[in-house]
Image 1: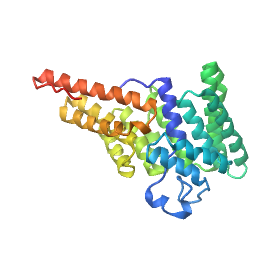
Image 2: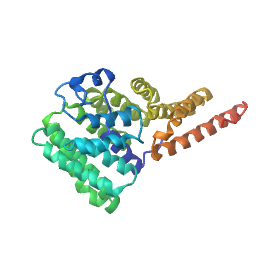
Image 3: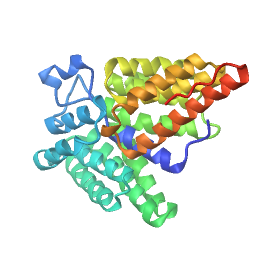
Image 4: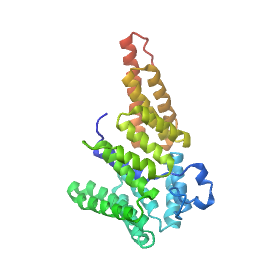
Length: 313
């Protein structure tokens, strides 16, 4: 599998790092922690609308209705930087540069206010805000203008880590950055990043998905499949989880030249495609391409082995 492109890397980082996920049902049903998807101890009042946006976007995988809850969060939970970070991240994936800049600056503004009372989250979202603003600068001015922003990102992430190196929210966001860098940069060793992410990040659902993506990109497909199954077990209706498992099965099927495994991959792609109405184009377009390529690979194997070629719809 080739190294991922700059655009894909940024989309993965922005979506997975900043668009965080709801916890397991046992935590979300506990009123004491109902508004903090990261912590079972020292929980923060992140806000019910922001939490509902998490559930809509990532437990259900529904990108079409999430803005309703994000808009409520923006009007009712005005001091929560995560809601603005989510809106900025979605703006980036839609190439809406002005809203990216607007919500990156709001992320920075609210994080600055939060910093004195909650240095972990305040510094964390100062880092996030500068990353988001750096993405805007990158698109408008190129990489040179974004270098200073990148330095600020690491400065504030380090400050957050100094306050509490084991904080789950910090380790979730910083962990995804470490994983993506470790997996996609030459001469890097991802084992330490994986170990720390698995040990300290939360919620578990996001950890399982992140590890599945990391092992997929490392071409360790058996491990990737293990964690994809865990993610599906926690959030079985999320079409992106079916897509992810289909990707892993497709790679295994290609390697083993197995029609059965490739057809299983198609089944998972079809499950994801059945909910394409709630997915954005940057998900549905590559999904359609991988469905087509999987069918072509099945026909190719059948031709090579002398089996009958099917005309799958």
